Length: 170
Image (cartoon, rainbow, N blue to C red; front, top):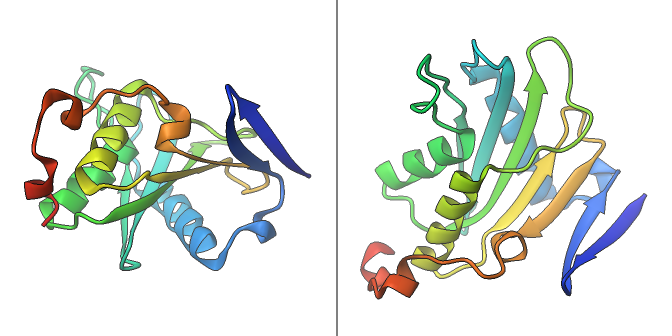
């Protein structure tokens, strides 16, 4: 079933058919699903994989890495963004997130935490694009598609602080 969800006039898509995704979206979701295999989650047993697609088509994966102090845990989305930045990859276009438990699949898509949403929003301002977000359950039978501005319509980022973000785009 293909549903259109609207919240405060923002239109997003919820689909229950992986086949409706574009080839680029499928490739990104598959890369995020593959990244769950690299997750280190000995405390929550909740595996998260993320994958970023650049405007040039490059895919950068990331997975969550938990710390026994919890506060030092790195989410998959941030891991992927940090890795892209570390390699001077700065044309982020879309990010996919797929989750699984160690012992069973997730039934519903999981959404990025507030810290990750903020970092994605910052990246969208820095790179001058409304980054697309795809989140999927383990079996890819329930998929939510939105943009960062759909999820944070009144976001606050580096531009709001007067940062000249253009110098960070190259």
